[in-house]
Image 1 (tube, helix red, strand yellow):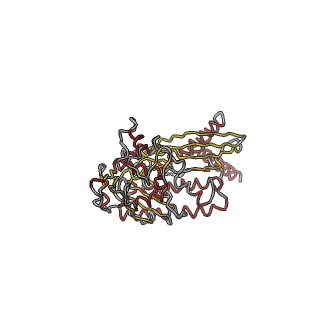
Image 2 (spheres, rainbow, N blue to C red):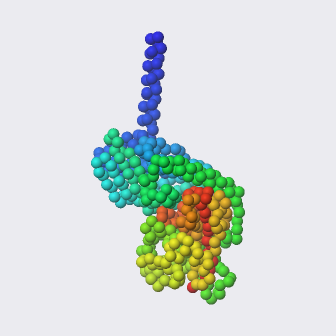
Image 3 (cartoon, rainbow, N blue to C red):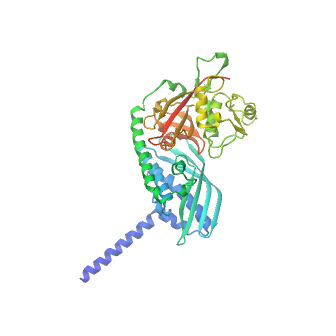
Length: 428
């Protein structure tokens, strides 16, 4: 009996030692403990924010799960952000996407500390290199976040996150809230259904892409960096070619932040930026004219704009800045100004023919629970026709440069819709 008792004691000690060793070897737990040993609360809060973003991208680099419970206080909102990461991870595993390297940068707009609570307002960005894209750096910038913290038993925990990150922010519309922090306990099941739908759509889309990856269409003429799209129905003397390389150069230069001679629509700048890229494609922008005032003067004079499609530093028309007005205008325009043709209209991500996409095109989409097109992006390059992992885009809100197309399509969902616009020469 005594021998059995000693054996049980030894087993308990081994178990406790193993548990202690596991906790100390857990890198998330170790970093969290180090942060909570810092000298003041502001340092702790900012270090926890940076740990969150580093863990997120490091997990996507190594394709591994993260123990978020160490950082989060459990509620519907924090469950959402754990689900967002889980979906990002599963999606990247399905499509074979890995981060090769990343460099996060955070701008703190405001930090409010009050007793045992804190609120952090920040803008997030990152320079990312994907393992499958050699020599290309994807830039993400101006993604707004609000973090809520509470000190519990002398340890700070994240209690809520809000963001305008594309895809995630549209859940505010789905749940009719102004902030994702307002999500309620009884909405957890609906969140589960939402992410299940996204996963099912992602799997269907992957099968569609694999079966159509090698499809090529006549639209591939614009893949050349110096392509000039022409339309034989326009009188040659009045023709202005659409040069996709000029539009792409503008998109890359100003994907992070637009020039001062154009205004910025806070939180809703996507189509305003796309119109600027199309304007550049029609020769409105001189690549060497930013430092000598040429482009500012062109915008002031509405060069390569029309009475129905223009903008400047003080604002622009609906046809320039609204998703659906822009589409209606460019696809029905028979007079002067930009001329576009819609394709794959109303297709879901799982039925869309990605082989139709070429550089200089515009894509628009809406998530499952919307009833109208919501977002516009500009295609900056097509490295391999038909493969959205090698189709790059630039866009605003959130601001991205040379992002892979799957970061756009992954949030559309089964009932969501997409459409493309390709441009030809126009009269001005």
